[in-house]
Length: 557
Image (cartoon, rainbow, N blue to C red):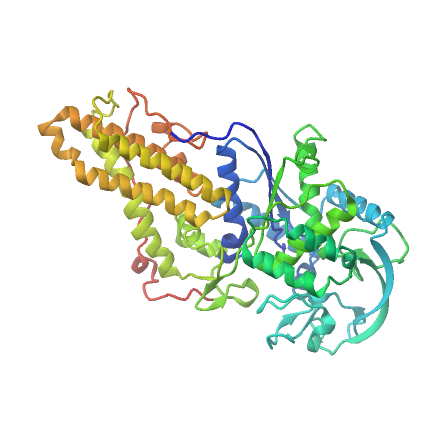
């Protein structure tokens, strides 16, 4: 059988920090959080030391924009949505080692330390610049407080930092006909002083480093090389705000804060340090960050590529001595009826809406089968239901049910010794072991859809084995052979369960009473004497008629 690797590798699974400004949708789950969880769960079973961290980004201007709109404080918005996220992660089985926020004293201290070291190293300087000012609201406007028409695609509701429609990163001054989100007035350019990070100093170094990134997804490398070819631009890393990490120097006077573009990515480091402190060894984080043998993977959507493949590596280089990203397996978009899912525009299902319709494992399965790893993927309620019913229930759920039912009734609920295996029996077990090896290779390359496919094809192979051997008939004509077939099928099911464990944590655990917990990436033995209970369904079939959704293919609203 396929065995896990012997050397324990420290693996950092770093996951995009969601703004605590509104409910997240299924596109966010498919884009970053589910892939990260699948990968982390596999790495733990493979015997590696996994540290999976993220948290709620509490300093983004979307939070203050929403707070202004609702007439409440940013802290009230943060508390509301951070609690929502934590509840949803638990319901979905996202296996964080630490999920925190950027609002901690620890994060502020780590951010300020990085700022001061980079300032001392000459990679941060002060500059006067012109930024938009709202003459009605009488305040400088951070990027997200400005909307206008995207100069690249013509989208009329582009933000001052990025166009949500075409994913182009923008400066507010790039927008056509900009307007203040506070008053609706046309903003005016006025002089203001800020700290800038000298990203331009790292263009050549980043380009050379990117050329060493073997195995990265082509769209991530192509996007990144496009930026280095044009030359990175220095960016202001402070803003005229009263919500954010305080500056550790007073050069700019009052009313300035470190900006989210700079501090959010530092969260991967600050969360690692927080995790270490919480676990009683304040230096434990160094095993991941001061270790050339470590592996760092950043799970983000494609709109976050420049921040993780360019800006964050530049900040790490400017600080010195910290491990650089080993992979940024950014996903493309999940679309509904041709539109990119976006909570701000009401496109797609929120996480809570998805969980109200589908069981957590079933939802995880359907999304994992459609992960947008190399291209945008189209999803709808009816397609999610089809995958659950026609693939998950029909192939895996029914296989477990039929094998357990026969083992319970034909074997008296106890696993006997298997005798005189035939080539067809060993071929099945070899095929399951091969599927585990193939699945491991796929997941290591962050080809998670292919890893799921390998496990499901192994399940189909077990179903075909049962159909060809017909143990229900053998039970009366050749009971000894029937026992061998059913024991072989149980062993094969146990192996397939391992292959599906990173994708389906809840239904995997539901079989612990028979097979024991999945502790390693291998097909476990099913010892003689193991009790096999009468089965109950692993998954409920989705009835769109009962949900009143039979004709609803476009989940918008």
